[in-house]
Amino acid sequence: MALRLPAPDEYEAFIAKATAGYAAEIAASGALPAEAAEQKARRDHERLLPSGRDTPGQLIFRLTADGEPVGWLWLAVPGEQGDPDMAWVNLVEVDESFRGRGYGREAMLLAEAEARSRGMRSVGLNVHGSNMVARSLYTSLGYDVMTQQLKKSL
Image (cartoon, rainbow, N blue to C red; front, side, top):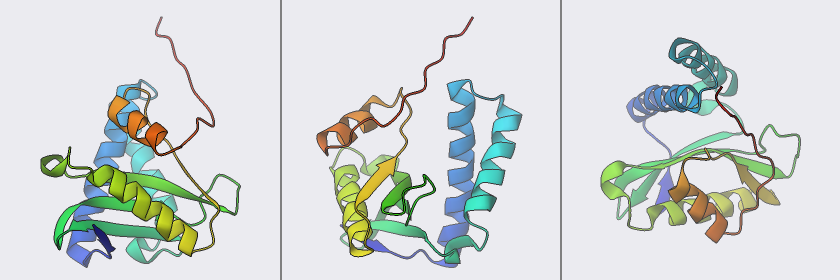
């Protein structure tokens, strides 16, 4: 598995899909209604990527296996969490037809190697509580819980 920079048309498709996916996750969590979630997702991506794929410190890669695109990795170096030595995985996604082949684990190891090569000492990420597959993967890779948010519907 390898990382490569996306072509301009790939990037445009990626950002549209990433924004929609982020909005859907926000809405599904109950944090915001769908329309407000869509607005937040657009604002957040515009803030994080003001120069698109050329934004300094925001590394967007196409994941490839045997030269074939299989997913995406968005790594911020450093992240925005206030630790100048911590990279942040904003998104790691293996395309649905390629899931279950270990590519997610390989993608995270590539993210760690990329962060290390840029002088980072740790890697952080967010994962939705309902995403048990991802949570299991991150735990198996040695990631520890930093914070938790809880909610109860009334």
